[in-house]
Length: 289
Image (cartoon, rainbow, N blue to C red; front, side, top):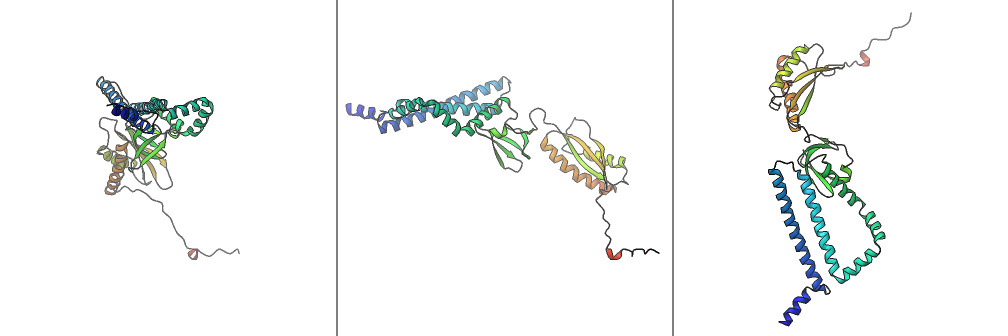
């Protein structure tokens, strides 16, 4: 019995190698269990807030859970270091030179700390949320996740943009979902100078009213003359659509169907004309008398 007690005591003695390893495993499992329990509590709180019809931002919840997990493992690591004699002595040495240590760690982790603080700023001020449609760096996509270090955006080509939070915090972006997802879709068209503008406008509006991607209940589409270029009269169609995805689909649908309708009605979509004259065909120069 005494031998078994001595064996168990040695197994959990932080002064021995076996005991230090055993305690490390115990602390890791305990920290993981604490993360799981606290995550469930946060999720339950979010569910209750949702039931109370309060707006709960998923990005804020995810960021809080990641910060919480980081703090749990950090506290567990510090407590473990205080129990192991070798690590306790090392911690004492580090604390003795705390100023130099903080300076070195600050320089080494400058980028990481900047991304962490920027991620917190994004989670608090919420210029975008998880699931929002955004355009950044000439890329259109959907925000997938906001981590402690970077933000993940899935583009329309199903590519993943991984942008550091520090860089993203200083960028100008377009958010199509944060307030009102409606979009005023515009389609640029051109007709020849001998075209009846009222006829062209009527044909365009008929096709716009038949567009399946147009927003029901919104203002009627309208057409304006926007330019007199070298070869054509520029027309611009305005039509309201529910969101940015519908805007792309509406533009493609309208360009195809308006072109087919112009062909049936004899409305010309002009293109540049060039007259080529060969030098050998030029008349000879006139001589002075």
